[in-house]
Length: 222
Image (tube, rainbow, N blue to C red; front, side):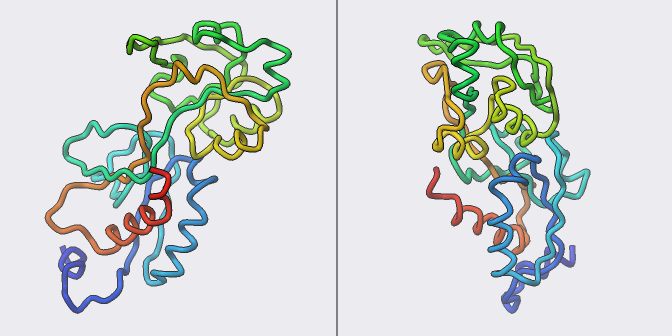
């Protein structure tokens, strides 16, 4: 209550205090570090406490100020602010596709070694969208699964199998042609990377400053 009161005091010129953030491992190890550095340079009195987990945490119960998540918001008690566009891309190395064949339809992934992100709500079912707008759920299997997206990306870059990853994680390897994307015509509509925080009449200045900073840093990718 005291912190909320301070956050709206006209005389408070600078956000301060501990800011608890929940973020996935793949984001924490790819896009986030540079944004954190520039944020702390701008707001040195904010102490960042980063909780890395792929699961959807209960922000209120676990005392989290803001979470960064991919996908639509389901909890109406939260506020979501879109920071950037995001899709999920099916990819592997050009050498892998040359050896095992490029799938023309999502169901052909059943014949491939798929690298599975274990903290996804439906880890073994990859969902696509057909030309009529209907979902296609494909049961995939593979010899490597993990809750660490960066580990799976590394395995894909080593030619071990097929990876499905968010734009922010695979964009650079795709641009550099270390990975090659397939099944683009079956992609689901673009979603987004969102900042999620509890609804409140008083939003702490440290939360507002952090989200504004990410929006300024990543907003050109919307």
